[in-house]
Length: 116
Image 1 (cartoon, rainbow, N blue to C red):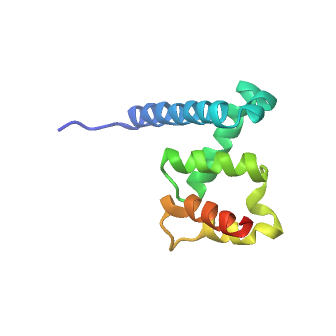
Image 2 (image 1 turned 45 degrees about the vertical axis):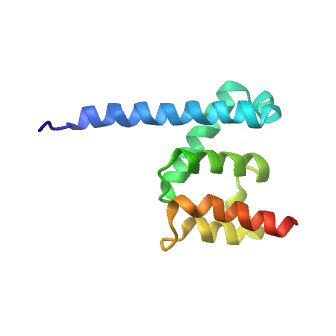
């Protein structure tokens, strides 16, 4: 059996985070081309890092969760979860009892129900 030491774990974590950033950039470029044009590569990558950090803070660990937060950010604005009218979103994201990997889908489902 082998042992992963802290420096190795840090390198793996950085590699996975960079891959997630790359995934967000590719997602925004393909699904939100106007936003990608406005933000550019660097701005989109900065947004990706913010979304990764936010996802971790909400207990989310899947790339799809980060992509969902990126989509919500582009649709609703960077501070979407801190606005008073979106208290319900913050409640979902901050919930410890909900499945972390279902939170973004719950938000999109509720947004769809509200709009139509």
